[in-house]
Image 1 (spheres, one colour):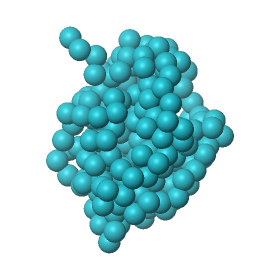
Image 2 (cartoon, one colour):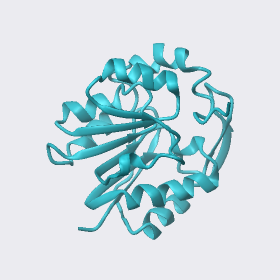
Image 3 (cartoon, helix red, strand yellow):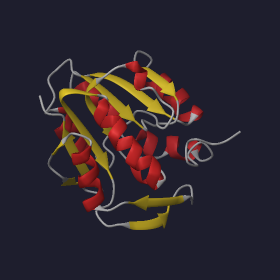
Length: 195
């Protein structure tokens, strides 16, 4: 069976017992700030949700209605224990129909660079197409065009670089939004679907 989780299913227990319990982990403050830009009751998708901690938890605390997708069965099982009332599916982002709906916001922390270049390009367009007018996109990826081995899975990771991400956001029909860096040095790109 092919592991669509880019190696995270094989290290799920290590992840769950570490980062997967870090309520105020790296990136939590950025996710909180982004969530506050959405109206209460907005429908938001967390792509590559893992255990749902901290991102989905933050979305719920902000009064948002969350949906979630992750390709690791063990992560999704843990997510369901953490958030039994949140709709979550175990699917790769490539295959996922995103619940066959649109969203007011889509957030993806720590996922984009795990994917192939071709998949990243397709995913940015797919996320943009799933946003409602005025909808907001936020994802993490390094600023520089670089390849490296993921510290946890030892699988290849790659960043297309800021120029390519901005171009993909723009050619997907989104306005380029603010960029941020969190306390862990992660870089965030954002886009907004015109109203």
